Picture 1: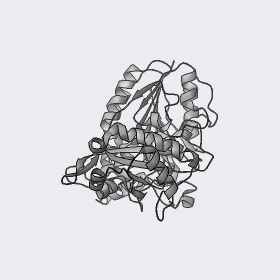
Picture 2: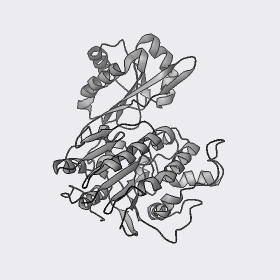
Picture 3: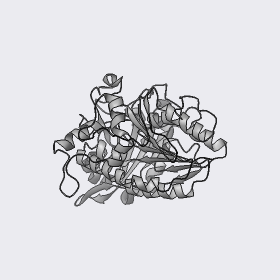
Picture 4: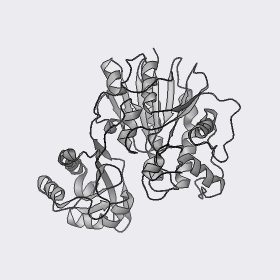
Length: 406
């Protein structure tokens, strides 16, 4: 029986979304603009990387051709491949949003056909009634922030006051999210988690997608930095996903990184946490070694989005892509006959774009494995085709949405 390995390169969009204009993102292209900047020398950083974007292994799987399919443009410095060695194509999102849960749920065969609720951009993000409920039920002296903000900037702005006052830092973004930052020692990590659990209950009637714990350490003199102990408290998917189907049919679903949080722990049989792309890659290699016939390993590589996309860091994003590319042969060497690897993304986060938020883009689909014949998948009309294909490959009942390309 086959195994399947599904890897989400968080935010690695390739442009061309047909509805990008509706989201204010017409022309956004995460891969295309990173490659363009690198070709122009704007992706250089001393001691990190320099020169054109170099992704030889991803290119050999058809990344350049997938970009052409998505947006009509070959990324700068990436030539056409004379011999492609995998499945390649692009997928459009049909979910109503460009957020993490919507993208992942759709990948797993369950598109989001409802509208999330969002907090106001102008003025206080959270109204007096909501803040009052949080203060009363969580027994805290108040909150700081109460606005749309970048996570790194807001802890720099309010970190010292947070430590002296005991008030957690609460903020949001254009995603459907309530984020709470607190110092791991001064406030307490477990206390932060309990606070988020209560806030999750309070915002449930508002249809907010996620409450996120954003712990940090440091001090005012030397600066603050976020830690790897982030935890997401998500609304569960409204209906069964690929993960539930696999679990119900006796398969092991190994979730690496924040996958379990995104799916509210539904359908997961084995959770592997790790902080940073390198640690996530090592945890994935171990999961591949331990996966048995019929199992699914599902990994989210979060650094592309969290560290580089949102922070609009082109050199950092480019270096992270090149590092991932260099490691890909380690995965290939661990595959057994019948195995399938699929790589994709959940949305875009163009580091050259205005603001700090996700961008509406098509995403790549790149697949390989022993005996997998190279061919174009064209444009898939939904991310759900990915989950449908994994289900068919593993001999599982079909997902509710999506058409298999396997």
